Amino acid sequence: MFRSTTQSLHGLLFRPIMSRLSLLFRIASAMPLLALLACSPESTPPVEPAEPTAETAPSDDQAAGQLTIRANGEDFVRQGFVTKDDWQVTFDHVYVTLAEVTAYQSDPPFDAEAGGQPQAQQMVNLDAPMTVDLAEGGDDADPILIATVEAPAGRYNALSWQMQPAATGPAEGQTIWLEGTAAKADETIAFVVKLDPTLQFVCGDFVGDNRKGILEAADQADLEATFHFDHLFGDGEAAPDDDINTGALGFEPLAAIATDGSLEVDMAELEAQLTPEDYTALINILPSLGHVGEGHCDETILTNS
Amino acid sequence: MKPFKLRRTVIWALQRLGLVVAAGACTPLAAMAHGAHVQSRTTSAVEIQAAYDSGEPMAAATVQVFAPDDPETPRFTGVTDTAGRFVFVPQQPGDWEVSVRQAGHGDIAVIPVEADGAIAAGFTQSAGLTPLQRGVVLGAVAWGCVGTALFFGRGKR
Image (cartoon, rainbow over all chains, first blue to last red; front, top):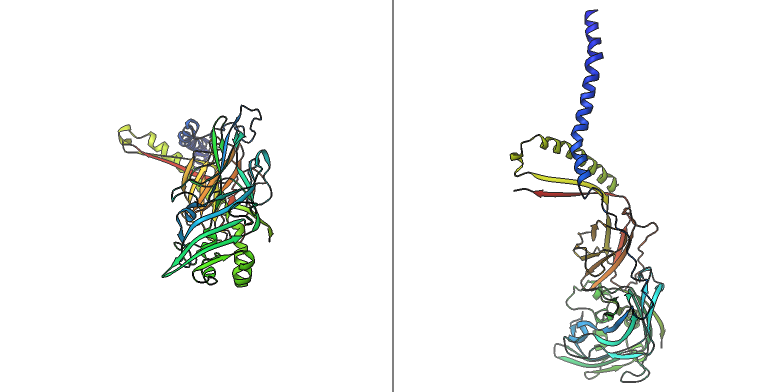
């Protein structure tokens, strides 16, 4: 009976006290953490108000700047390069004719991988076709100027252009005119390759060392149509099984149809003289030439005459 | 499965931290001269995964992350891991731009982030690359409210 009473008193008095003490200890042990979290500036990430999107550019004349559009054949064209099949290629001229060059302030940003068309909030269009020589200038020449135009300030995050046969000039009748020399061991071939498909490129934001197309009012910004000729010839500095080489034509198929160290061919002659596999590869490569820096484009062959 | 595992880890860390800090509070200040402080919190993170269209991961590719209010200066920079992944914590709502570049090829993904840090509903980053492109597939990993622990450590001397 006494023992039972003692146990009962213990249960009545001590157990609730110990339980409360245990609870208090748990709360106390967690307080520093709660205080720390409450005081830490990191505990509640600041929610900053959304900035107005740059694409909603003002339309008044004062909110305008100068937008410069250039074409860039990169060092492959300016300095020459070694193809995937070890031909050292240098270019005297790489004429390309661009038309309907259009810069967009697209909202939402254009995703070239998904295709479609930019949702333009502002748009700048160059009407006249223009033939430029991507090989113009020295090894370190700047990309070739296409045009500088006054444009509404804002974020130009998409660029499209067509490539079409030149109506006049040194590359008349041709879309792409490749003229240069290829050398391998003791063989040298002077070549002129003339290609006349009409191509369409629709590209998103420029991808490169620096951002492009961000035009402030009364300021200047650049955009660039970039051409990757390593897609056509491959890159001797890359591994043979690298995608850039496995998908490339190389120069060997062209060397095989040269005569006495000379080759001048147009599309019809290429179709007649190349193997069907090589000609098909060439046709399939052409739409992949156009880029925006390192960024890809949505490409289409409109015609292949 | 992995996010759930990560979340459990975070909770464990918070509980353990509470006890550690409580013990430290009872220790004389002189004993903390060489102490280290670790804080942790849960937050929403965005993971991108970059790969060539062949499926090969873009390992060790250069990554630049641009905040919505400054598209010219990268807020975060780094390289992808061996699987082509990169994780960052967006600190404000808006369109975050992630540039991934390697060997002359690259892409920019624009990832819309909501006020709560989650990726905007319905956002997808599709990849319709032609066989000739060495494109970058930026898999926008819509982790939403995936808990990610950020540990801030600082030694005292």
